[in-house]
Amino acid sequence: MNALLEEFHILNKYSVEDFYVDSIYSRMNREEERLRRFFMDYIIDNKCSFKLDNINNYLGALDIKESNVGEIIKNLRDKNGIYVEDNEVAFVYPVSSKPTNHRVYLEDGRELYAMCAIDSIGCSFTFNKDVYIKSSCSHCGEKITISVKAGEIVDHSPEDIHILHVNTNKFKDWGTSC
Image (cartoon, rainbow, N blue to C red):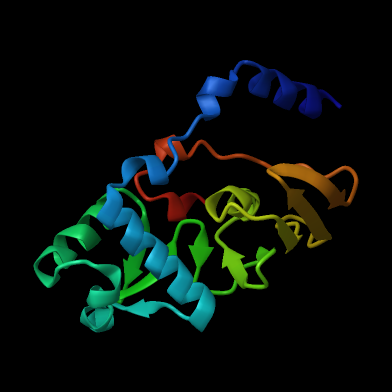
């Protein structure tokens, strides 16, 4: 009980503002957001990362000039909008090209893996859609489900669910804190 009270006192010294994080969207210009959305949709629809060597095949549909794409990708990386490994876009916050414990079902029928529990809930706002989440506790493995409708959690199991929020403002690369 003392450990729980100590934890509460530690958390109690923070305000809501201490947990505020600028949205990824607010950091992007139009071209960056268009490319970021393309990468998200590609990963969701193809269930794999995007090979950057193939980007020129999509530029016409994206209305992005070949001469600008390198700078746009660099900006997306610098703004933590995407994470690239082995010349492939592997993560586009909140979407993961790799399986995670956080499976998100969008109301439009698409499915994706979210990078973390908070990202899975945030998918409702990212895609402006209702979502159903199947996850599991990273500590004990217990199954977790959450329904988000119109931006509100309307159902969840178990009843006593808790989510730990990490102050991502302290990290340059958010992926390392999930």
